[in-house]
Amino acid sequence: MQIKQGEFCPLIKKDCVQHKCAWFTCVRGKDVNTGKDVDEWGCAIGWMPMLMINTANESRKTCAATESFRNEMVEQNKQMLKLTHNKKALID
Image 1 (cartoon, rainbow, N blue to C red):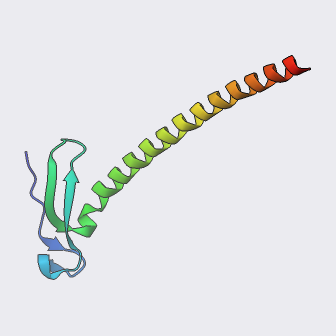
Image 2 (tube, helix red, strand yellow; image 1 turned 180 degrees about the vertical axis):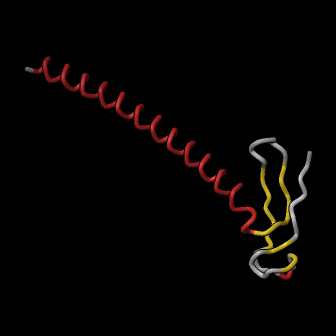
C-alpha cells in the first residue's frame, strides 16, 4: 500500500506552493532500501529523515573503514618493532 503524502505545509499554514518555495528541492541518488534510483521533488524539511538516516549509514561505513585502517597500522607497527628488535639483538 502506498500512502500519499499530504499537501498541507505547516510553515505557511496552507497547501504547498511547490516550485515557488525555496525549500522545494530535487533529491537524486539511490534509495538504500530498494536500490532504485531516486529523482524526486519535495520539501527539504520532508527529506530530512531520509537524509539523516543516509548520513548515519555513511558515518558507520567511515568508522568501520577507519577502524580497519587502524588495525592494519597496529599490525604493521608490531611487525616493524619485531624486525627492529631482532636486528638490534643481532648487532649487540
